[in-house]
Length: 147
Length: 142
Image 1 (spheres, rainbow over the protein chains, first blue to last red):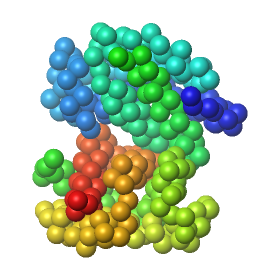
Image 2 (image 1 turned 45 degrees about the vertical axis):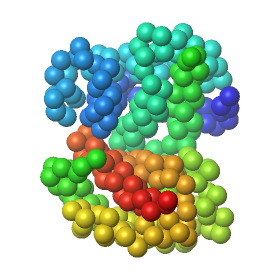
Image 3 (image 1 turned 180 degrees about the vertical axis):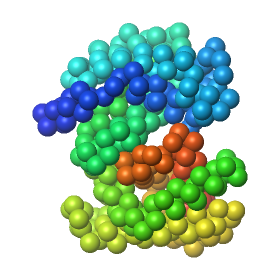
Image 4 (image 1 turned 60 degrees about the horizontal axis):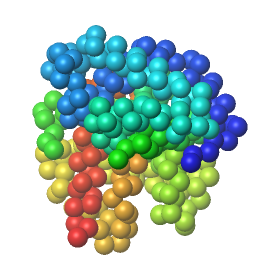
């Protein structure tokens, strides 16, 4: 079970407060689909994913990205209880969505990269380290109910 | 995995934009890696790993120079990095998982310093580039 120090929690909370969830969500999912094109396998119904600009501008990608990142907000509120907080979503991703948990790691790292583009120097090694712990914790929690 | 013509252009343009900061970025990527992925420190027990360490600066420049060399030989990275590949296989023997950690931290470093250039397409090309270099460096492991 991942444990966050008080300092890590406050680092994460303070940065999260400045994130535009709608924008960042669309960008995170978009970049996942651009950088790791095989992840498009889950999104056949999303329409035009034929180029980087098509993907980044695709309204379904943006909407779904917002959904995903909003859900990630739950992680920020439940850093000490990630596994229970994501239990239902874990079951969903296994039983209904059939998503390989490796994808959670890919998306987590893309999110970290987006935070770096948005926050620049403020995204210091220490801040990154706290966020890597969080995205890793979420990835583990989402995989926890797989069978 | 193949680097397309567009990838090669993106990689060269990105490296150009980085210019003389490459060494600093190399050092920063290493520092980020040691912080976020502490298991990577096991390969550097002989280093001073504190912030601003001369050894990290020196090693960051070494890494950046090797990457710059690869950028100049995108059509034949295996030949350009052959000696480094031997070194990693026979002496350094860094577990392959760690190349992903360093590659990720290189991307984070570049993203934080050059957000304007770090478009999704450039991000994709650089990810492919670091992945290719990693594969070359571990290609003679067994």
